[in-house]
Length: 326
Ligand SMILES: NC(=O)c1ccc[n+]([C@@H]2O[C@H](COP(=O)([O-])OP(=O)(O)OC[C@H]3O[C@@H](n4cnc5c(N)ncnc54)[C@H](OP(=O)(O)O)[C@@H]3O)[C@@H](O)[C@H]2O)c1
Image (cartoon, rainbow, N blue to C red):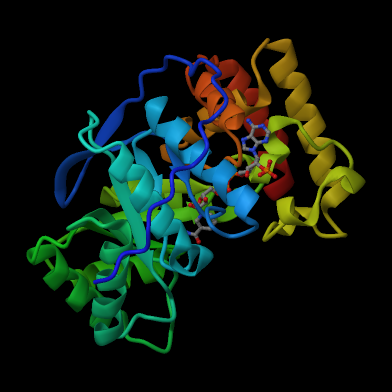
């Protein structure tokens, strides 16, 4: 295999990383525990070289600040996210506790030969012998899930992947995948879940709790909306709206009114809105997977995670958005 040269990113700004202890939970399929909060690398290697260097520094900074759950996918930056993460991990070789590395096979590669080729490419780009957790990025109803699950079980037996999981699966799809996987367990379902985009997660969370599937919540900050950074429709860039049903022309005003109510609740409780958003996810029984494009965002989110948020504050926040979905 020919490896591309690993270029060192510029040093991140030397802000002192907050000292937060990150807990972890047991996960079926691997003895390495699953950290309770993680960094997603969707944006890594996606835009300009300058963005890439900043985001690479952000990933490095996150590891130095104690983040160990690092989430990537073969489709992120067409493999560049995995390759850059591989370089960052190489520069942190031997760090303790060890990183918990997650990647995903594309929804376009779910036939057995494609899955085998996909994991091969992922491991080469990451420059690792295995990933701790491998997810089916999204279902494809043209490919029987049993075909995909069969090969994932073999890859787990061979030690090339630790735990097996899925992403963006609804309850029937999850049940079907579990039946197809046999005695091995679907360990994780990774879904979009946050205070304002909560319908699917609310439906899945009881099912996952009952069946022992870890619910990973992506987009926990609604692309920054739940940091209180955008309070009017015009202030939200297109990139920070992506994929949200709550920000289309019909819903944007009412969603922003909710965000303003949530910000008021947070302010009265003297905590940040991000702390409310992340702890609401924790209390729903899910694990937040946030994104960050600069080191200061990692620090702010870790500080938010380290801030206790009383239950009555979370109850008030929950009521603001639950009523919108009843
Ligand atoms: N399985 C799937 O289908 C799927 C889909 C989507 C995402 N994911 C995973 O989940 C990860 C996270 O998703 P996401 O990026 O949508 O999560 P997010 O945490 O809701 O949004 C991240 C964005 O919010 C802003 N932000 C974060 N912290 C901030 C802070 N403290 N202050 C101000 N702004 C802040 C930044 O926007 P700016 O960069 O604009 O500043 C950042 O890029 C992805 O990287 C990926 O690994 C998986």
